[in-house]
Image (cartoon, rainbow, N blue to C red; front, side, top):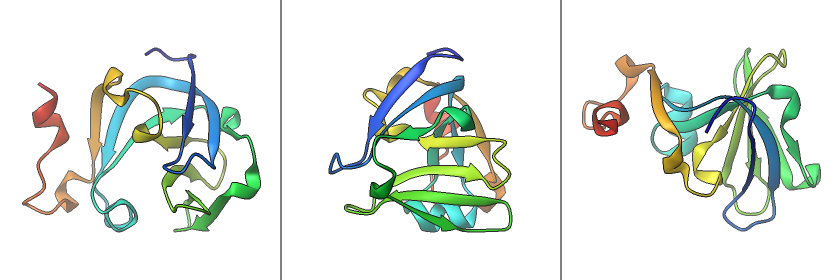
Length: 128
């Protein structure tokens, strides 16, 4: 996948559907405490152009302001993790697992690695 490509995705139940334009076409993992509590593990995501992220029905999306910097979106029906978005609108990431074949994204970055539990394997070591 490459920067500028359009992706479509959906939550587990299919109620929250979206489209967005890739910012860089790679996958990343965040191990911060908030992401780990939110997803029960690292947040595996792809960066999208924040202004391109659009849901077919905004009423299907719940939003939680999780810090002074960001908010997180979830499906109001099934609870699926949908997105992380900077409050200033400068950036957004969607869960890589919401799109068909998330394995097509090259794994590029891990952040807050120092915060991950020692028993959690690193996606970077599995990326080969």
